[in-house]
Length: 144
Length: 398
Image 1 (tube, each protein chain N blue to C red):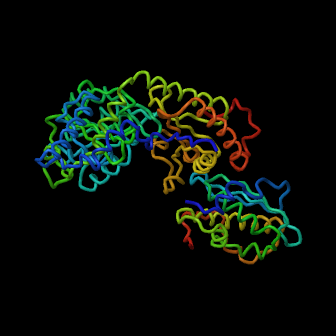
Image 2 (cartoon, chains in turn red, blue):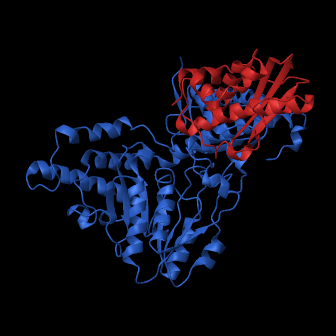
Image 3 (cartoon, chains in turn blue, red):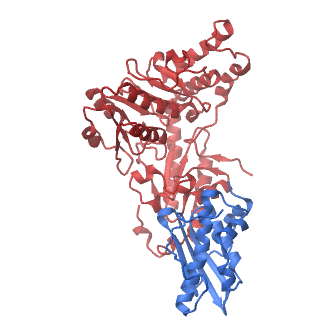
């Protein structure tokens, strides 16, 4: 059902945990739907120097969060903003259609953490104007 | 690599060697069509009749009351649709429960679209149907009550004797989906006033794709599958002779040494339950504490999700199942766990381990040992667990 990449990230998830005094924290998802992702970012001079996550969810939710953290670590905010759910899914060698919302959650978790950072530090991040962390990824028009 | 530990016996079971051996000649030696008049066909007919007797003997029926089907789902469909359409002139109301198998629930939903009225009874926290609600739901229009003998997910056994008595008193047909119960519970259809009973061979070490519907003599019902005179003109289609032979052998084996076998299974299950409850916090046993299928254990581990639990178990060579939404392809967790009152987030963390004849104490101990590690690992990863880590264990919500 899952690709070897998904299973690898599920077996050995990268960047699990919390960052004390994180500069941005984002939490998306809903326990009712069976998945919650929490993303912690440490940002210095516009660069994500550290990232950690915690996820309650299925195998692909854990793998998607793990992959997303790898894709933004060491990147600038602008670069992190360009990480889409499609890119996360592709990096995992694909997700089953019913699991695509997990990659949407991962993208949203990064954006929610960046939004938190932008609010706390009063900085403008291009592309977050219309972002709504409350949006339900299950209703999302999912690009496969 | 240790051998794979199979604890999903409620999903299906391996065919026992004795069963397979009896089946094999009917594939390519005694392959005649039971409807043919020559001796090769006659051999097959004798085999089918022998199997029919074995099935009837297993629960106090007459062989004339046993009709072979393609499995449990067909038997359920036939029972509900067959009674509904044949008794329309008497009424259009059917009573069932919220925790039935989808073969019943979806058939009832289909009948609703055909103009029938269905009452879905509630269950209590253990998954037992509400008898008072059943009595109150009966109207002059009620033609059928269909309540499962034992639940496939949480194992709770229903008060079948009482339901049978009520149905008989009111002159209403009573069907029970006994797919999980056959082989695990002693059943006498006459004593329990059961009019129709569904069963499936692969749940008790028989082959897949074969089941039966018991129809008490005199029950008025329509056919589901038309096209031939097989099964006394009630179920068309050339008999699946090897599978029928396998069903007959498997059901006979299931009731040989029944008490001894049941006690062994129950003690193994109790070992599993008590070890899990003792070694893992924030865990809940679903289903009735005692009145349940001997091999069934169903837990909810809070703060984690069932699919990741199953994947992790598979990685250490253990097969189980979950009522989590992620394992069903839908967004809602199991309808059974919701019906017993569990909130969604807890129902997502369910794990069913169903033990069978081939499981051992060593396997149970290994599974518990691995479960402790897996639950701990997934909880460390879970944002839901953060807030409770500091709480005292005694405040845990069971």
